[in-house]
Image (tube, rainbow, N blue to C red):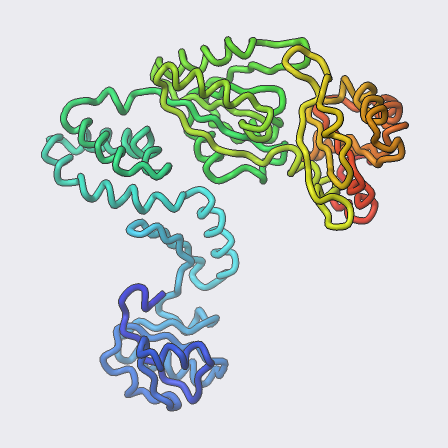
Length: 435
């Protein structure tokens, strides 16, 4: 890190590890094979003692202090005149976290939390701001006007364009704002975000950031309460939950709602359980957005098949049991369960069925009718990845009756295949009653 900051590093030590020896051979650092002597500090602007000999550390500290040179002694705060903070590097933005040497590990943990909240693209955003700083100062006479301009830029579509890699478009938009077209900063946008299977720790960094800045959140019943807790506190919440044969809003109405809210200039979070493009109707929604010229972003989420199976201890593929995995939905647009049964019963594959709880008896019967062994292991997982997770394991002959006896409720995921046998050995997340 010192070299990254363009420091000239002079190293004094009786011996070197291989890594430092390679750096010295490459002339990245200057190395002198020697024990410590106070005259080695002459001309230095910073001194670091990193030995395991307390007497040498004390000598280095005293010699540096006598010459008014800042000194850091590793793991010895009392000998230091400065400490090395943990940093979040988003150059030219740098955030430093220091415990004054009292708890460096805690400082690193805090740094890791900040890392999740500050995207890497903030550095590019800072560079963009630097490039426009003089022009903004010329455009706005008062500091208050400049502050408002930059706040809108850093929290609105300009920043989002940078974060999504569209820096050329961001520069053009910023130039248009400076030329007087302030409407662009107030335009609405839709964030189509996958909320994952339920555990909020499975959200992506980008999903969390957009959830924190949305003006309106349009969400459905598959989004867990824990994930909803992370939506911006003062955002307007619009529930559009759908269940089989019971819809708060029809899909077409949801599509139009997103368009209307965005055209009102609002930042609209369309929050879905799992992944928006895996049985989430995300494709239908962005078709409507595109047709109406509404800007949008899509943030993938961990789909239920991946997240729920992992928490249930059931690998979807395994070289001894399944070389492929098939995802399907338990009911079609017309409410039927008329699936591609010959494809589903192929050997050496895992079948994952979304939204199949209501049709479970028919699904099991049809699979057996089309040639899948009735003794094929299968599992139904309720509210997987959450503290309310429940798992029922049986075979195709008995699964429906067992699930009914356990009174499982949606949302549930069905997993069928030889890999289900592995749950007995691999189950690691058991917050609820398992069967």
